[in-house]
Length: 567
Ligand code: FES
Image (spheres, helix red, strand yellow):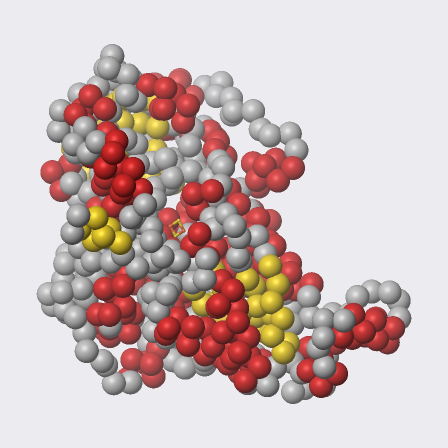
């Protein structure tokens, strides 16, 4: 250790008398039953996120205990502290609105409390990005461990996992092929263990991205939540956090332009969640790193999809883990990766991948020359409808719709959508393009509303997919020919706000374009005198509206971006 204050002596409370502040802090710490010997040790903070409103973090107490065990065994004092926890389906209007709040909470509590390193325990969709954003800005050595994915359930002999199968069954229920009695039974069979969604949704994608960045221990992203190895991983993470105090490896050393590019490669090869693009942009943006959409597309076009998991393919996260997990995937991608990136252990990616490879299940993790698809799962679009970009998950879409043109059927907002989508009198045909306005970051906090339901009358007629366009996001567990993250969003006067019923819209995945086939002068005329929707007057929502950026900037707050760690 250096002579700098460490452990509980860091950042003393300001009473104007440092010795008194130290005396008082130790006295109060002893009220927690900590021995004087332990009080002199370095401190590892554990950012924990249990919540009665977060089923995905049900295993948190065991994980905190395991991390603490590792920290103690390595000779430091573990002190767990709570932060905001975001349970995806329990938040209104959308968890996305609170990711930045959690990131600020995490950053500020890491900085304000006396710790030498921090372990971040998250899992559900927004929690891992929030923790990585906060830790990147806090500038203290940090390491991530995730709660891990759920294991699958069974229904009439079929494996079920949240939440791709939730959507599949709900679509059948809407189409009338599953009745009310069966859907009630299925409700209890989709999410049957602790942990995050069982497919390659946003939570699983972000867990893999954290490992690809080098922010979590190798091989830990996909271990099922209820597997004993998950607790071993937590204990090892505690030990690693103590080593970080010596090596002083901060997120800035780990999250670099090269490691972010590696993470984009992994995202493509996983056919991961579209949400991960927004989150990765936000994490990288904290350190002043930007991956332009052109670079993103270049990576996508040169990276094969190698992992065969739902929502795009067949398997579940437990299969990915058993198949060899991230180690196996990274070895296949090796020729495309920057190998001189450094992880939280101070090891280069080359050193990690030089270790002996284990057995790989090629049904789940394909060899590089036998891909699921020769190109990456996601692509960025531009065009007159989205001058600053949009995202399309080609791996989860219908190829027959890749080059298509259709008539716009416009919904002006979320309420309009839910009021009219199932109206039998809705003027909609199978070849139409469904357009949702005012669901972007400013208008609505960017909810996962981009997966517009197929209008009931078309669903009942057997229509399975249509082109759908919005400034919203889509759940990582969803699928369809869906254009998302349109920027600028409608609520700040983007061209999306100018679309009217009956306009023609052209999608071209070959040209990576999404165009409103209306003359520019007419678009300008329609947007003339545009007025944004009224802003909330007070509180966090007012701050959000004033400072949230668009999707290409990660929807971070403008005043939190690009500054990186202090000093
Ligand atoms: Fe938490 Fe899906 S709801 S990961």
